[in-house]
Image (cartoon, rainbow, N blue to C red):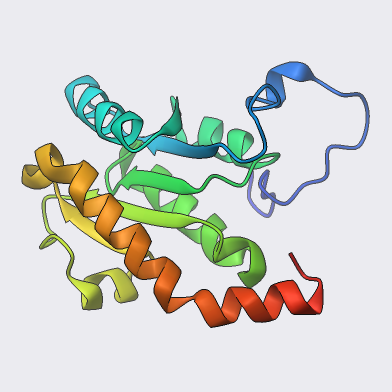
Length: 170
């Protein structure tokens, strides 16, 4: 990624490219998830868990691909392995998420997966500016973990989101 450029924030001035609009076919109420993981076995486990929770799943091939996909769509859930696309790829994605306007960022539930985390460690999640951290050894329980985390997040941010709606920000 070029220094100083953030594809997540850049405007798509010009012609409409259907290949960049991955979820145009979805009903507006459908929930979507983006998986940023390099290991094919883990991708399968994560995708299966998210599909059980009725998310439409899209898998990013690289950090740049993930940023491109996030340009036009606010994913409900983003699962990111801390070593995705090399260490810099995951870090770049986390930085891009930090730059988002809070009204947009709060619509996304970001899960950071890695070997150095204790599952559902709130302090580690806070430190990394994500909603939830999951140890890679707990991916078999991901559906229950994400379901619990998303529900908890909705309760926690209910008043904030209600205020944004009343202000016309969402």
